[in-house]
Image 1: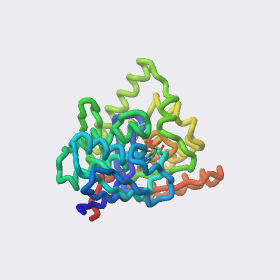
Image 2 (image 1 turned 180 degrees about the vertical axis):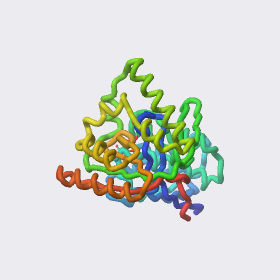
Image 3 (image 1 turned 120 degrees about the vertical axis):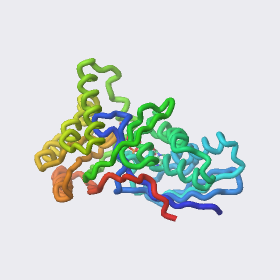
Length: 306
Ligand SMILES: Nc1ncnc2c1ncn2[C@@H]1O[C@H](COP(=O)(O)OP(=O)(O)O)[C@@H](O)[C@H]1O
Ligand SMILES: N[C@@H](CCOP(=O)(O)O)C(=O)O
């Protein structure tokens, strides 16, 4: 059986001010996935993890992506997928995107490169639609392209890979579940022109800072006047983590994706590690279990292991 084994990174979507358009791949945590080509037109999904995710293909984000690919290309072959998930679903670290993007990229490999990167993004977005009700690509694009990506548009797909600054990323995942679908529903449907102008300035400043490796500009652009004030209410300890991390020397940060994870960027490993210890202590004090990752921006995205 033609088979491939992939390492699929977690992703931090939005990058604070770029709701649904910016995202970055990080090295830790990551999922592992094996995809094999079957001679019969069926899709089999098996999970080797403890998250109790549905294995019925139409209910699993990897399965739905493969069903769409099968239908589109009128394939008489099928796929067997083994997922070993380490990125907890509902973490805000792109768990659903990892399975969706991994399925699209893995299928493309076993089918001997029948798709472009943008086509893989197109099919992977069906997985995000299943998970959250919306076809957003801000987690999928950095998985497939690597590094930091700007999703200029999803229809037509227009993805701009950006520079990958040499920065450390500290992320904390407090063990409270926030489903992307729920945290999208609480968002305001209309915003004022004043806040839109402020947000445009932040997004433009952030993209310019990333492209110019201007860390100070990145830091002062990591501000969100639209989404964070609403969503942060769902995340215990958010204000404390953010304020104290900034005091410790973080460049900036905020909610990772739709939360509850929080991420911070730092120039030095030492600062990133101090922030990790701070995050852990804040949640220990609140008696909330948490997982902390000190990582770097992952310029490659999905990697082929075998
Ligand atoms: N293979 C899969 N990986 C992750 N989540 C999946 C998968 N298949 C289905 N789901 C569903 O997707 C939802 C998780 O997606 P989401 O809330 O966007 O989490 P995250 O922010 O970590 O991506 C859960 O309802 C989960 O049951
Ligand atoms: N732009 C989306 C990103 C969701 O990311 P996830 O990691 O929480 O799935 C949003 O903010 O809803």
